[in-house]
Length: 178
Ligand SMILES: [Zn+2]
Image (cartoon, rainbow, N blue to C red; front, top):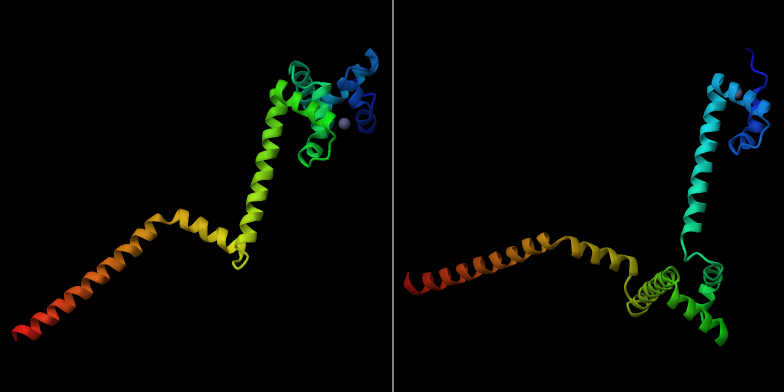
């Protein structure tokens, strides 16, 4: 049996086909085309995958008791809250949501940690303005990663010191006894 549809037609119908919104006859035509056309089949598989993922996310959100309208409000006001741009009533509302909703609390903690990090690095830059900040960071990283090298140079200094003392003592002994 010859396929009734062209690739363009199938492409146009595919999203309806995936969502099962075609008539039985049309659906059958698309199915037949897909079975004989690897290119359209691939498109169909991609679309089906995408739809499955979307459904997964949707069910996750439905099943999560903390993703509520209230939480959405919280999310949209969060940065204003952090920046002290809300009035007292809104501030209290945010705090109440954060107390009752673990998801919101986590968000709040995350954004505070981030702000703190940002603030800390800014303060550091300010207090060490004589130094190139990035160089400083790199130096610190190298310092943390090179304990072994440090021990190495420490030993060199100690050995050098001993060698010096040995020479001096040997020199004194030579002077005194020979
Ligand atoms: Zn095709």
